[in-house]
Image (tube, rainbow, N blue to C red; front, top):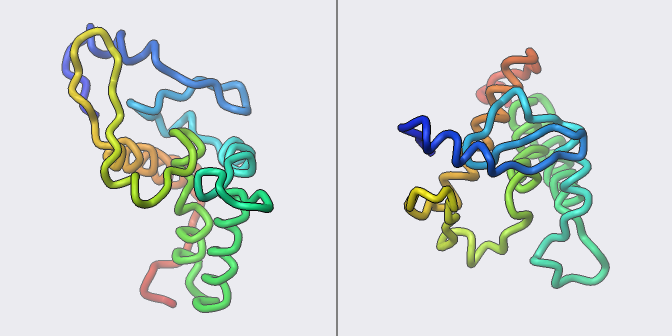
Amino acid sequence: MSISTEAERRAVDRRWIQTYGGRKFHPIIPDPKTVDIVCIAHALSHICRFGGHCDPFYSVAEHCWRVWQLAVDKCPLNQAVQLYALLHDAAEAYLIGDVVHPVKGSLHVFVDDGLCTPIVPFKQVEDDVMEAFEETRQYYGITHRVMSEG
């Protein structure tokens, strides 16, 4: 989401969540420096897949681990694919949890900033959070092999 005026920035800046690690995270304007892998793991372990309609409890973290395990089995030399598999739902830790697939494409996020900001497609917000995570990965020098190696 692009913020064009100082008034918009101040209004959106008041909308944040406190992470497991105690940091402020702004889902609408994510800052890569506030993304924390421990907070992602903690949050995803508490979010149930399928909108909670499963028995027994099946967390997004377990789902990500299972997808990662498939990637390790199918692409043992491709760490980029493995990393993507492990973190493909990382944004859900900072957004509204596991959105069931039939709803995700139609969902929009209303930005209540007092300035009549238009509704933002959920996918755009999710992509912004994932982009922030990618910047964090690069910032901390977390490396992986290029995708073509697998």
